[in-house]
Length: 354
Ligand code: ATP
View 1 (cartoon, rainbow, N blue to C red):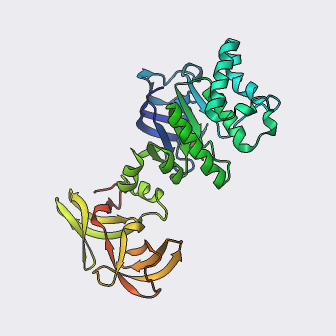
View 2: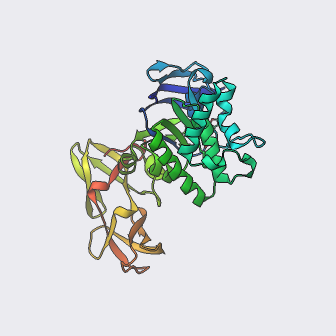
């Protein structure tokens, strides 16, 4: 098992910077998610952890040892690729044992490890079958088996479930997480799927344009987004953003939106100019009274809840309310926000003020 720490890591490809001064720590035994949109630098970061790319500057530590410029072969971590490449002409046992046999490990030890891995993955009865005849899910298990059998210090996974359909993906993600909980090996997992990151991860790093926007446990990232980008990327439907102009003194704990005074969870350090109030759809209540008002433009039925779209003086707001709440398109209603859940962003920098 291993702790992995990256410190001010940067990666340039010619004049293009794919990763800019990134720092975060993956604690021993954590299931750690690298999350962000396509092209944000997740894979490049993972490849630098693996030693498949060398950082242009900065340091990478595995268990306290600086390995940034060391090749992959000297890092003792296993990279599980998106496309699981198995040897179709070999049976399951040979596929799993391949990395050990190619290291010249003794037969008895190879047998012991393969048996153990097959037991962990629940594929003991398949060991003598050719992989070409297995289902997609079993093939994924064999590929995982081949990574696990080396007993590496850590696993690096790049969208391992990316090619699967939704239902199967859900099942495999549960299996992967359960496997991790049994083995306790440090795992760094790349995904662009915010739900997958929230469901599976102990911690999440959110990246955008090569920059680490935020690093924390899923709840922290959801409840206290550090930037507007994080707030928008995580959650579905995403957080609502209401732009307003204000001059706020240090210590202010409420904002004015039109005629309404809206409390915010923490005191603002002082700000002026264009600000943005962030409120999640599930934290909007629709009331008959209420000083801040909006007109109901649409409602989308989702079973137990409905998503109501409202037009307000500061822009469109989506509210997630109970399906049983009476909602009439065209009505003007009051909107109330739960003060403890609001975020205020500086509109220019996108950084959260509270
Ligand atoms: P995706 O989910 O699409 O794989 P990503 O977040 O993993 O995206 P990266 O693959 O790390 O992103 O790529 C980040 C940026 O660096 C992209 O703009 C990509 O085109 C660029 N890039 C990656 N590898 C190279 C390379 N070898 N040479 C030049 N540019 C590269």
